[in-house]
Image 1 (cartoon, rainbow, N blue to C red):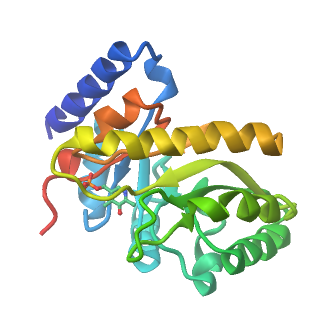
Image 2 (image 1 turned 120 degrees about the horizontal axis):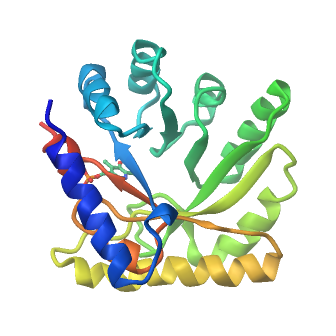
Amino acid sequence: MRCESLELVKEKILRACERSGRSVSDVKLLGASKTVPAERLREFYECGLHVFGENRVQEFLKKYEELESFDIEWHFIGRLQSNKVKYIIDKVVLIHSLDRESLAKEIQKRAERLGRVQEVLVEVNVGNEESKGGVKTEQLEEFISRVLELKNLKVIGLMCIPPYMENPEDVRPFFGRLRDLRDKLGTRLGIPLGELSMGMSHDFEVAIEEGATIVRVGSLLFGERG
Ligand SMILES: *Cc1c(COP(=O)(O)O)cnc(C)c1O
């Protein structure tokens, strides 16, 4: 396979970093690989993409097994049911979608059993959309302070899926809002909230200009989903 789409995305990341005076080493590209078969992920792996994020537990477990011999950094980026935490907790480096206390408690319980600390991002509903998951902005501080009491969970940043806008420029304020929340709460709670997981295929360049440290790119890398 030629690595064209990966090279294209990396080039766009580089240019967005240059425009905003950021270092390209501060932005991690995550391949959002839902519906993409393991075989194709292996091709991307060989092109140099080693970070993938999955949305569905079943699908993730299957690919995890199929690609076990590769040194892949797996993330979980989809909505997570509490009763599925036990299947993924020893396999992912980061859960992007912590959005409720019951889930936090379950992750705490499972991580404690394994004697490890699970890194998580809190998903924020930056558009305060009824239809979307994520913690509402006005409840965020209280939510994070409660999660901080759980010793086997480490909140290292925030994630968002902003409202879809035809023009990526219109998404910019939502990315800016997530960054401001991160800065403000990091200071108020006295914890380093370094990571900002934001930006997908059609808006990751704007997200980088607004401070994204992880961009989750699917269709632009792997092609449109069927
Ligand atoms: C599918 C998905 C992406 C990637 O979306 P694209 O538009 O295909 O780049 C990013 N984040 C999450 C949470 C997703 O589910």
